[in-house]
Structure formats: C-alpha cells, structure tokens
Image 1 (cartoon, rainbow, N blue to C red):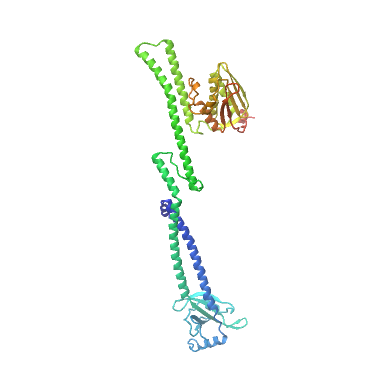
Image 2: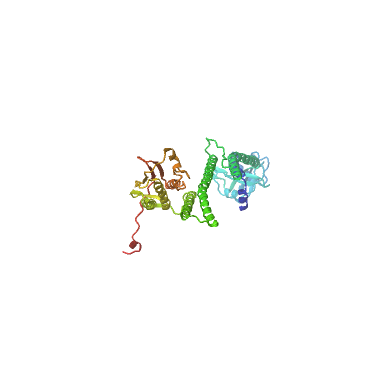
Length: 486
C-alpha cells in the first residue's frame, strides 16, 4: 500500500488528477451498476414469484388420488402441471410424489418438511433451491386447503420454476454493465486528463515564467492574466506578478542605494586620502608641515573619519529589514524618548535655546530607533538654526512638533526631503550624509505614524511626527513588594 502511495505521489499533477477523476467515476459507476443489477434481479424474481403464485392449490381429492398412485403416477391422470413448472408433493417425513408432466424432480429440503408440519394455506414460502440434476430453481411451498382455516395434514405442495432464463438475463446484464462501466471509466480518465491539461495550462505558464526568471533573473517577466478572471490560478498569477514587481522595485532601490552610497563615500575618502598623502609626504621628504597646517590636516582627517562612521551607521540602519532591530517592539514612553533626545541635542548646539513642552504619551516601537529618529530631527533643526536661535519642541496628543527659525526649505524641495542621500543645494557644504530624514521616515512608518516637513509661519521649518498611542503600562511594583516584604 505504501509503495502504491509513493508511486502515486511521484506522478505529475495532471496524471494524479486523471487518476482521481477516473477513480471517482469508477466508484460512481460501480455503485450505479450494482444498484441497477440488484433492482433488475428483484424485478425478475418478482416475475417468477408471480408465475408461481398463479398456480392454484390442489384439491384434497386430487391430492388423495395422487398420493395413492405414487410413486409411479400414470401419465393419463387428471390434473397436469403447468408448462415448464416443477410440481410435487412432500410429506412431513420427507417422502415426495411428483405431479405428472412435471418439468423435473426437486430436491426435498428441510424447509419443505417443516412446511408440511402445518403451513397456513393463505401463505406462500419462497426460496432458491435446485432440482435433482443440480439446476437452479425458484421454489414455492403452499398448503392444501381442506376447509375454512384448515389444511391437508402432513403434506405440502412444492412448485418451482427454472432460473435458467433469469440467470442468463442477469449474466447478460452484468456483462453489459461491466463493459459500459469500463468504457465510462476509460472515458472519464481521458476526460480528466484533458480537463487537467486545460486547467493546469495557466500553471504551466507560471512554471515556465518562474523557470525563465530563475534562468535569466529578469524581474520584468509577467504572466498574462484575464481581467475578469478571479479563480485560484488567476490569483496565483497576480500574486506572482506582484512579487516580481516588488522584487524589481527592491532591486532598483538596492542598486540606487549602492550607487548613492558609492557617490557619497567617494568624496570623504578622496579628501581623507589627500590629507593622509600630504602628511606622509611631509614625513618622507623631511620637510614637516607648519604646526598650524598639520593640526588642521589632522582635524580634517578626524572629521572625515567621523563622517564616514556616521554614514556607515546610517547605511546599516537603512539596510536593516523592517522589524528586525536590536530591540523588540514594546510599549514605551514617547515623552522619555524625546527628553533623552533633547539632552543630546543641547550638547550639540550649546549656543542655541531649545524649549520643550512635553505631555505624557505611550507608543508601540523600538525605544532606541525612536530616539535616533527624534535626534535626527533635532540635529536637522540645530544644523540650520542661526547662532543664538531658538528651537521649539512640543509634544501633545501624540503629535511631536520641532520648529526652528532657520532659512527654511523651498517649496520645490519639500517632496524630496525624505529621499535617501538627497541634500538641498544650499546644505551640501554642511556635514551630513542625506540619510537622517530617510531614517526618520522609515522609523515613524514602522510605528504606524507619519512625518511631515513644512515651512513655519514667520520663517523656518516645522517637522511634525504623529504616532498612534498605546495603552498606559501598569506601574512597576516597589522594591519591597517585589522582595515579598510587608
């Protein structure tokens, strides 16, 4: 059995479908054929029984005369058996007397002797038996009536009809049903194979497309799908097309990220190499640089290394798959995150005045990622604020606003501020990689929020972050309660 199951599983899908269809049709045809055979058998046997029922019971006088003439009754005796009918009388002790012109001699059975003991003349007993030659017959036992409610004692009349014609009809019917069933099963198998081929044709196209994609890595491959089709294969094809489109978009973004990263890395690396070559040449030639120039070169090298480290960190953050950070998403206090970011921002802009008006708010997110996003917004405000300027930070109702009084962002540049490596032409001389706001947008979107950048009334820029709230976590138990102390 296991071998057959393994062999079945090794077949192609269309062959398995054809086998299943053929098996289902074979089961249905077999059920119908068997039911038909039994129904016809019942009808034929009913006809035989009706023929036996047409035989009239013997009169007591005829039975007495026939018994007196047994065992060799003369052929000229009054009362002959119907044509093609076995007819005889059986006594309670198993003796029998054959009616003249009977079609043959029947075997005496225990059923006949039991019926002779006292069978109701109003009833008939039917069963299958055989004659003395072994031929199958249909037998009916009936009593001899002697009066109202009385029967001839100790004798039963046994009538029978040969089942030769009935069995021949049933055998012919069985052969016909077998042939028809075989043709039906073969036709069903062929039809199932044809239907499977037609139904799996879209799957074949999908398979060819996947194989071609694996062979050529061409993500522009699409499977044609009818617009009005909504079956499983059409949905699978649409899903495949959506998947390849997403992969193509991801590949384009990956290539763009690599190209932009290479471009951004080239400038600090070139400057770093130039400065190091100057320092090395001065050492090799024995002509040291003036202390002021040497100090300036070392400061430039340090700044460039710091910029490279920051750029690499930003690239790592952007390349990290969503939801796979160093921390798990949890309910965290957004107010505490903003306060921690403000402490870092005040260290980076000590000459600026940073005001804060913060209300409690809890969100779902990664605390470190959210803090980095807020720090990036504040760094952007610090970078573009004039010396001695003011930065206003406000958190209320889950909306964080950071407003600076710098030069602002032109209207035509606002759609690009969250693009990777995009930097305003007026800010390209300032330090930065152009990835800060991209990281902000990614982090906020992961938390289910949104971030916008817009001109502020009276000049400057206002950054707005909206985050959905989370349930307030229960307070942590006190230390003595944790230790089980009263």
